[in-house]
Length: 223
Image (tube, rainbow, N blue to C red; front, top):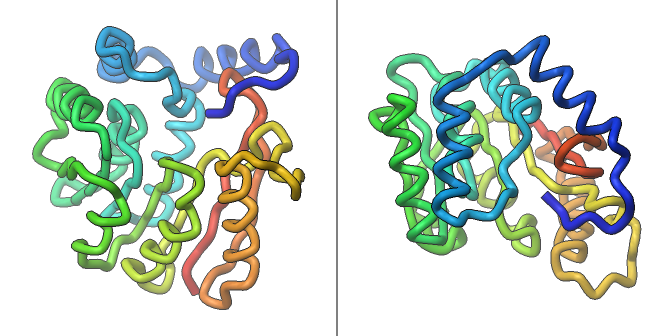
């Protein structure tokens, strides 16, 4: 999620609520996750319910058996992704903050997914170097200045057909600001340049609006 720079259109949240009411329904485990995150003092930067379900569906469409997530927070997106896996599937999620990781592990236990998910703590650039692929689906939602390096690792840990999704790539249009001093925007612009020049990837990006403001996802497939 990005910090809101301008006035948010109230219709965005209303449409998100309509989507959730008509298509998602009640989900006690996810609701408990958000409550536990708030009680634990975690920042309110989880993906929205509609976005979480989108990630779930993308992982299912990819027939993913192994998923890698960079940036766990409290495990909201982790739960949606883990639910997309078969019973013998595996999800590895990386989190730098020890407290966030503890909250996520408790949330995963509440959701009945502890046996399917491994939470690894430490700087992702260090822990990524220890992993072995291939993964079928990679979701990157961590510190934006390191996104180009995360994508390089994702490609290394992938196979032809692996899906890579990167969150927060529009940043309320900040991605257009070539002179920005914000390292998150600078990292996002480097990400676009890197992916656009990468012959091993076919990619696009989509803008989104909703309760998580104006932002978007980069989506790529490894060729």
